[in-house]
Length: 423
Image (cartoon, rainbow, N blue to C red; front, side, top):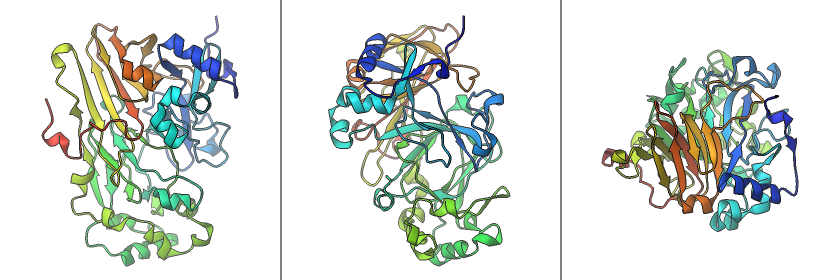
């Protein structure tokens, strides 16, 4: 008997409504998702995604190594020479598959709820595991207004470092963020002038923070950051825009094209324009850590009941709650029902169990085309009705990460809440 793989499924690209409805019936309001792997040509994989080592370059050496896995994504990856549907999550329904984007397009509010559908007409967020051997270039993601100049959307994002994927810290578990207070715009401009001289020195103007598993950060648009080498869970806005302000990383060249790829073409050599893309006050904020650092905050004290649900991403970006995330840990043999306020994407990071009618199992090693039982999309109706989770193991906890769309959780904590809200 052959084991089903992603490639053995029949791809359906239109009229998927009946398939979605059937899958929701079978899953109890849940959709099973296949792994969505994304390569990056300019980065080195950190080898903690559980992807088989023989498959790290499954797209071809010229495409780069696979260092990302995207969750419940309806956002295409902005890669050169990308394959069809790269970055888009597939729903698995029996021996067929279709993109989550097509499912949302045809069912709309039936999947993501009236409020998000009416405002965005799509699932506007996604999350990923971002896993690299070393640091990546000091870069920013454009704001909504800046990205609109090139027909794109802005990208605020957040980080959580799951302990289950960080048994090793790899080469540089520190992240440079922002710009040192007192730095001038002229100094940043000078680093752009020095681009082709080697290391342009942009990190000399920044500050690094040591990364700690089980904590996170919330980073708004236009803020420079050079993510370190922990494997990161990243709920974020559904966009792949960026501008890289560092010319050399660990001896590897960063092309000028990666600095200006999401800026208007007539501004690609305008150094003043490029500097002004940065949110200066946010970058030189003397209280940067206080305004961006996250630690988990329990939703409530349920330890005696054998489970704990914790906020891991919370806070607002420029006054808006654009995404939030929780980590649910369930003790062996425990069953619980959790009600949420909106649709969510979920990934299992440890253990095995059940979620409504679907089996959950965190794999030890995944082949590139292999189907897994660790990723699910939950509709708003199912989330509000209450999802039944059960840890069927007798030896280890069941741990899941789930992320939500914009303005779904008005009861989420504010920045800094971890200082006073812990059990």
